[in-house]
Amino acid sequence: MPDIRPYRPEDRDDIREICIATGRSGTGAAGWLESDDLLPDIYALPYVDFEPATAFVVDVDGRATGYILGVPDTRAFVARLREEWLPGFEARYPLTGENTPTQNFVRDGRNPERMLIPELDAYPAHLHIDLLPVLQGQGFGRRLVRTLNEALAQRGVPGVWLEYGPDNVNAAAFYRRLGFEPLPSGTGGTRVGMLTDATV
Ligand SMILES: CC(C)(COP(=O)(O)OP(=O)(O)OC[C@H]1O[C@@H](n2cnc3c(N)ncnc32)[C@H](O)[C@@H]1OP(=O)(O)O)[C@@H](O)C(=O)NCCC(=O)NCCS
Image (cartoon, rainbow, N blue to C red; front, side, top):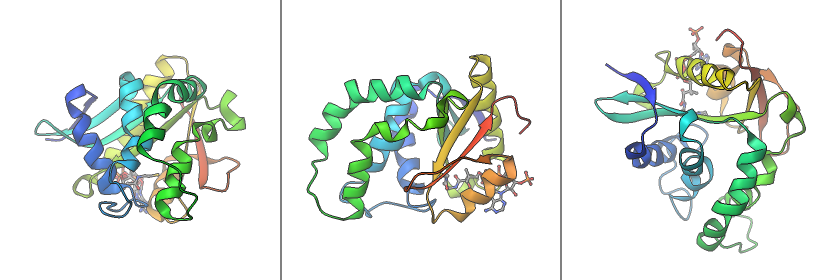
């Protein structure tokens, strides 16, 4: 039976795989960009490395098949990314100045300050959530958000936000259904937020 549990370091490769399997607006991203590692290196692996206590997985027979990755304090996370993650990231992913999907992600990855949105006082945390297709549509997304909200509320974090891409209509419907509220959005995607004491 699938079950939700805290992240463990041995899940790291599964986290990478899930990110690649869902990273193109909710569909498979393998072979899409110049390196399959680029999406996990931006949206998943620094999260489990720096904030493992607020990462949760859906465990199926000992393997992580879905995750929610939360960052309780986005400002502190951005500062740590800049100091500890960006040197390696910049070396792995040079800027070429081209207008390609790969380079657009490279620019995002090199600019963690994009996450310093003005609403951080009310929504200090942010999250990423992805489930392999086999797990979707069975209530695990809702349960993962509930699990993260409880962990954040226990830490005194009042709210959590996230951003989704313009093509991800399924994610948009999911977040709306769970009660995420629209936030002012940037050029990259749509931002929504939720208070962590909300009923999910
Ligand atoms: C988006 C995602 C996290 C949702 O998780 P999920 O487990 O499939 O969703 P749940 O089964 O928990 O659904 C929760 C509620 O949202 C609704 N919902 C979910 N997807 C929906 C959709 N595409 N359209 C309409 N409603 C939807 C469900 O009907 C359910 O409502 P209910 O509980 O009132 O019956 C998951 O499908 C996923 O990982 N997709 C691929 C990766 C992705 O897009 N991640 C988000 C990137 S921003």
